[in-house]
Image (cartoon, rainbow, N blue to C red; front, side):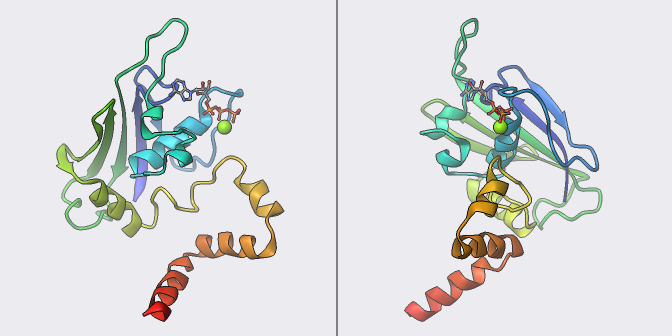
Length: 183
Ligand code: ATP
Ligand code: MG
């Protein structure tokens, strides 16, 4: 699956509707400190179903909503939409009938998150499974967080092995073996 567009509205520092075209070959984002580079990557994880507020550098999920600034009041919702090019029909069954797939996640204060796939209401789990099956997803090693490279370099051997195993996609096997041994 190829991501083609990310749209943000009220998400963290992106208070006004913002569009990022994900062109072929895009591998990184550069810009001055505090301009929102990490927020962009977090928006991508978030729309794929991230549930850990800590991974969004917040105390609670509502912290992704624009919190207000000197001249702008806070917003009541945040919305991120991800457009996936599906001309090659690589999306999993059930999401595969159109040339493009639009996933939208919206969070409203006091009402939690809601998801849509091509305009239809879907569950968080549907979206998470969609990306897990496509080997991307909020926890994918394809998304390199700020500081993750130095974490890898500075990690103790055992911790480093865990990171590499996760990148190789075999950490699930250990989990299954562990569960089997407990039975
Ligand atoms: P660096 O180069 O230092 O890593 P960056 O480009 O990655 O910077 P981000 O961390 O993405 O920057 O953006 C930080 C900015 O986002 C800060 O100014 C912070 O105040 C703002 N921000 C984060 N969450 C919110 C929020 N909920 N509402 C408003 N602004 C927010
Ligand atoms: Mg950053």
